[in-house]
Amino acid sequence: MQKAFRFGVVAGGHVSGSAWIALAQRIEKLGYSSLQVPDVLGTPLSTITALTAAASVTTKLRVGSFVFVNDYRHPALLAREIASLDRLSDGRVELGLGAGNWPNDFQQLGIPFDRAGVRVSRFAEGLSIIKQFFTSETVNFSGKYYTAEALRPVPRPVQQPHPPILIGSGGRRMLTLAAREADIIMPAPAQDASLEEKIGWIREAAGERFEHLELSQAAFGIDLTDSPVAAPPPSQGGIPVQPRPMTTEQAVAYLVEQRERLGISYIQIQERQIENFVPVLARLNGK
Image (tube, helix red, strand yellow):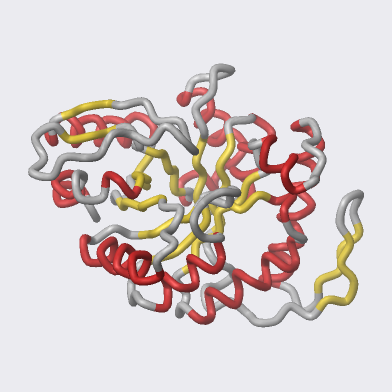
């Protein structure tokens, strides 16, 4: 069954508390579904703190990570933070997770940037602990990379069995794991395989779960040339952006075609696009 469109905004925060609050409230007022904060060094605000502040000044806006890097913190502690935020926000959290692909951040933190296979194996263990924390009476785990013993998982999240888990990756092993364990999947573009191939991997691994999955994709480069609000130039820092000027009609047709062909219905845009993108939001949101 085809899923309705929804739209999320990715933002790194503002040093000014009033500016961050105003942004979160503006995103909610315009009708965006979620506000997501990257888990990278150098953003104006840290992820969990920024999400907590945004949740506290909104009532419907979902908040999430884009995405938490597994190696930066023990998964049981992350699960506890997320369960707490889900409780305090009355069930408005989306948990984005990834294995991490920014070597410079690892270096600055003094964390070894292991080869992809090791990071994915560690991620798989971390995901198991997180799910246990959300769903079990006691967390007991003994793996190659992590251990948790007789851990009482408190608090419990509002959303059951757990907040929606989003996994973003471009690799087949990670996408296979996501197909079996995640609720939302963001297949990252890469040169090794087309987006169609990646979604094929997800479909194959998910089996009957595939119909229940939500597929997500960033539209950071789309700027509407006929919008009454001009978008600032794409950012050259952080996430790479390829400018894609389009009219509203072209953008709507592109996103509809992408959903028809690939099943992608959850679209992320950057903070700089929130006003410029309103005409597309008005046409597609919830449809």
